[in-house]
Image 1: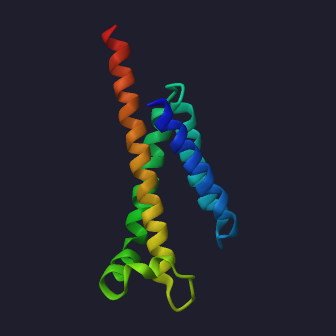
Image 2 (image 1 turned 180 degrees about the vertical axis):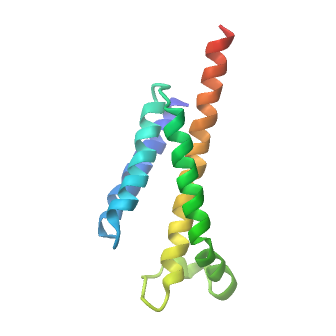
Length: 126
């Protein structure tokens, strides 16, 4: 799991870095950096479960909030539109990306949470 956590930490650091050109970079850099930090601590099996739970809730709530943009993408447009540049008349592109980014963050945080429960169970079994 150590290698997977290293890879996840690096990926989310890169995600945070590319957010600096976003219209609201502070929010997205903070979210992706938090996931990177949690994955970084997981390398050494250090988990902060309250922070994990709080971030999981934030990411899932945000993903649900932006989910209508993803529905619009799949129902009215081609999936390739997701990679096109954003325009004011196409807000579904940004909302789709944000929904998917938060969903991916939630999935990684869920993985870390379950790793923390496995570690806790392992410690209590000894």
